[in-house]
Length: 277
Image (tube, rainbow, N blue to C red; front, side, top):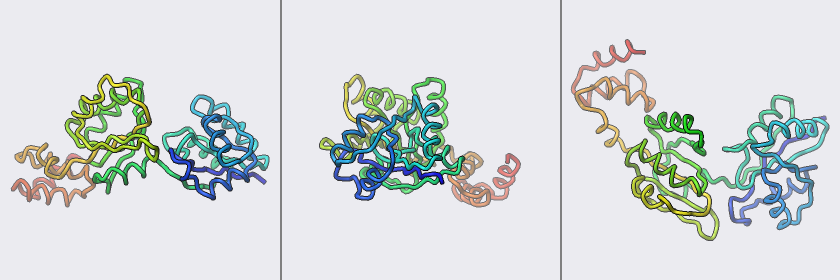
């Protein structure tokens, strides 16, 4: 009978956030698949857990994934951990989870801290609706394409970033999105935890050329309704209606709202929208 893959959350900084269930799980499995065995070894030593570690990360996942799967199919239990937070979120662990599901291996979760939810709660910005964008790639064509797609994003956006790429990312985001409120959050749950609420232009200027340390989460707040309306000329009811469609309104709702805002006839806007779809 196949074993089980346990997806285990680990602290993103403060070891006191490691849950009793997570500790019990690591102590009970046959082996642990870790992003960086050196980082996980420190966690295990702190909690006096002794289990075999295997390396599983971005650069060896295609080779190691099948090996881990074979052991699971043979009946062993494995815990999947990342250096910090929940595995499989902007993390190659998602490939191992998928591989297990495709081959009939049970997957269980042991929830733990995640920088995404922690940063959203910490920021105090409007985060009722948000889009998680993870890390921006360093591949220039793919990066440019990703950023261009974000120009029409209506929700608050969340990014992860490494310290050596922070300045370039802030500059690119400002040049693409224009002026927006941003929370620059670093070192969550650690001694130097900090949340700076500023503008994209100010953040890009502040961090340009700086040699910063720590892991960062960037939260770019969604534009207000007034800001979105100001982007569309009042004389263009069709463009305004199309912007409402992007926000999730139905064709009828978008036509009605655009008619109210511009004085145009709802029936005309509705006709134009349906002709384009």
